[in-house]
Image (cartoon, rainbow, N blue to C red; front, side, top):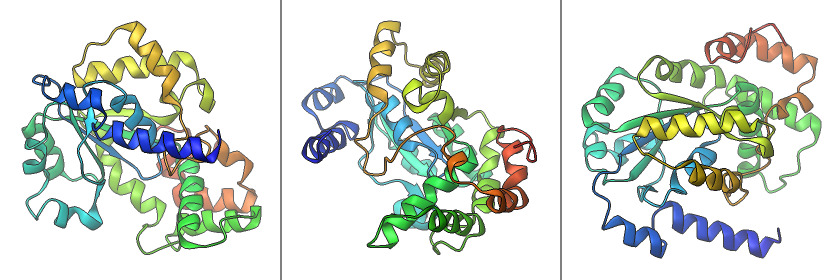
Length: 277
């Protein structure tokens, strides 16, 4: 896709995901019984993919606010916590957040009646994606050699990349509590489908589970159409969206560092034994 077409696609997607296209605007007036949704994710876990899976539905759209995370939580929520914001969500609106688990947040979601989703991805791919994203935003030269990428991944693991991005083990440990709640866990690997190296069967199952969880009945024919539109490069943070890309970049020293620092979180998040790779 040419740069111009990609830019136009990105602009159209921005309007659509925030419910500002003509069809979505008209649907808002007829939205009365649609779910209110909060999507929580580990940063760089494929939030864009989950957003498309939901916002491509004609009656679902993202609330016109940025992603809520700890750094802006106090200002976005005016010190009152999640509950008031969740209760102000309109029918069909979705809030996106990178928030660590806290019992007060779980209680706010439960009390508000919002449907909650937790998006995760293999921590090794999270580390590579974060390293690329943070390097691209911190430097004018965005070309990374294999050596510099490995150094950046190590910095992400150890929390040396930027003050705004905590060490990866800390992020994973603080978010892990969402795995043990009524929140639906969606794995990037099971949602991405064949274009991202996943399977069609897992993608179909995950989409069915997703829409069943939020309480929206959808036809199989519509889900088939959705699958064809799900994988897209229209997000400004999209790079390759592939499963297991970390294998091309981890050398033995980086593997050992990752096992020592993050290994136990692989098991906690369901990505195999910490030493078995």
